[in-house]
Amino acid sequence: MKDILAEINEAPTIQTNRLPVITWRWLKVNEFQLDDFTMEKVLPYNKGCFTAVPSGNIDVKAMAENIHYLEAENYFKNKGNIGVSDTFVKMVDTFYNTGAFIHVKDKIQDPVIISYKPDESNPMIMDKNFIVAEENSEVTVIIDYTSIDNTSALHNGLTKIYAKDGATINLIKLQDLNDTSINLDSNIAYIGENAKANYVSIEVGSDKSVVSYISNLEEEASESNLDSIYLVNGSRTLDMNYIMSHIGKKTLSRINAYGALMGKAKKTFKGTLDFKKGSTLSKASEEEYTILLDKTVKSQAIPLLLCQEDDVEGLHAASAGKIDEDQLFYIMSRGFSEKEAKKLIVESYFTPIIDKIPLSSMREEIQNIMNQRLMDV
Amino acid sequence: MSKKLLEIQNLKSSIEHTEILKGINLSINQGEIHVIMGPNGAGKSTLANVLMSHPKHEITEGNILFEGESINGFSADEKAKIGVFLSFQYPEEVAGITVENFLRAAKSAVTGEPVKFLPFKKALREQMKLLKIDETYGSRYLNVGFSGGEKKKNEILQMAVLEPKLAVLDETDSGLDVDAIKVVAEGVNTLANENNAILIITHHKKLLDYIKPNYVHVLLDGKIVKTSDGSLADEIESKGYEWLSNQGGV
Ligand SMILES: Nc1ncnc2c1ncn2[C@@H]1O[C@H](COP(=O)(O)OP(=O)(O)OP(=O)(O)O)[C@@H](O)[C@H]1O
Ligand SMILES: [Mg+2]
Image 1 (spheres, rainbow over the protein chains, first blue to last red):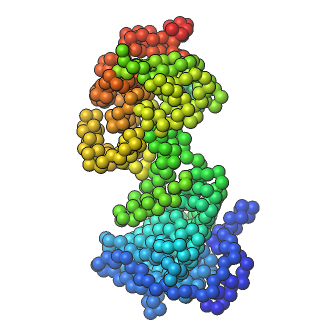
Image 2: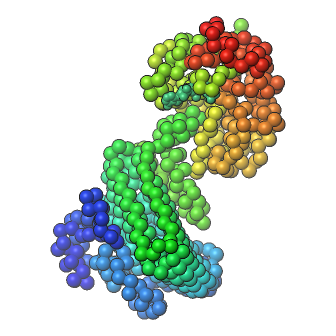
Image 3: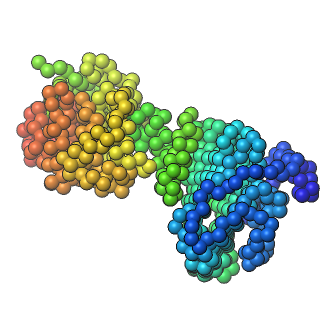
């Protein structure tokens, strides 16, 4: 632990979220620089994390040292770079203070709901989560990171998902830490033959939020979908690094990211579609769209296409724009003020993704959060 | 004598420095139905958009008086609140809010009063029934995936709910099948009373089989060049607009 802390505390700046291939040097987007970051030690998180655990052929436990699933552990061990930065990943992997182990063996209807809510006495979340889905099983896991007071929290998380042949893992994450918190979130997936990982990410909080998702489509016909929505207001920063790594034949991936920026918000979206040797007949698409609500925001999008294989199909599009004037006019003509109309439009961009959340209480919660954050539109 | 509701005086407008409306004069009293016809690009939608304060259109000269007061500087939502309504030629899609929630919020916005959930739901159902709109559309996102005709009917539904003093219908009958035109016309006739007025922009005489206008105006190149009664629509149907272009203003 000392080594890791020394590494972090002695560096004047920490590089996180590196692009898999260094280009675009002039844009300064190859990595996200975390300046002046120090920490003394990992503080304990003394709260439970399970809000709902479904019944059925599923094993759900708090993360502990004696929990093992060697096949998956060996796989991830050999994967190299698996998150926002080696140091932060190593830190949580070894010195986690909370986390969940979910082992599913059947199709489970109801979601596992996990909540990490930092507060004054629990200002640090180092959650190590491990989701293993046996062949042809299915599970939905919802993880909610929300501040409940104005404590500056540090979240450094690691979520590994391991979907064996024919399995489906749906992972939904909401991050709404307060505006003085730091969020570092590493996610990595193994997807087996005909297996599927569906990740829905809702990013609305933290002063600095660095999120990473590396999805490995390892076997024939593995499928990976990422729906990401974000809202960055105030002077907050969000850096997203998403990698779809196509390894097996006939694999399929999709990234859809929609967001809105306001005030002095900064956002970088990095989306890499990586076709490895042997990934013939694979298809990938990514689309990113950002609404710029103020002139003072900074928005960058780096869609990257890497091809070691010819017979593949990769589509990418990224764009940013202002609110559509005609749409705004239409809504205002029905009596809504400009502010209300803008809110409605921004919400309308997010709705198709929010609608994918199988929990109405959470959908409402997100709507409320968005509403609040859009207050000074 | 019925009261004057809308008076447009020598209205000129431009968009991106191009003048479109070139001096419109039009006066509409309570209880009246007016029709505007005119060739493509004449400025009909522009007039409707200027009336509703589309931010891209600029009034460069003239006045719009509503119930005797100038509303030139009003924003679109302020216009809605005093009772102006526009049925759009191309209604926008808004995902994320259902027709019912949108309309309840809109009703509350224009009246400035809270709208009760259940009575509203019931009233909306009645209106939908009259307009032959399936109930399920109430819980669909506003105009999302609606067919062209369904969007138009939904505009009339919004008009029926908001009960404006002045409704401007921009080609609401375009793209509707014969039955739907009849339904829309019935919707308009239900709304029409001695206290409000309706301005209908159309290309088709068909609608006038069901709605009897007090006046028909022809708009050509940013100006109203002729005003007459319903028979003018028949004349246009047989003769087109060509013959009017050399008549000048009336
Ligand atoms: N942004 C713009 N810049 C320049 N000219 C414009 C712009 N928008 C509209 N116009 C022009 O204004 C004129 C009037 O358009 P408008 O939409 O009012 O016509 P209209 O009478 O409603 O036609 P239609 O019957 O086809 O609906 C047209 O010549 C159109 O090209
Ligand atoms: Mg038009």
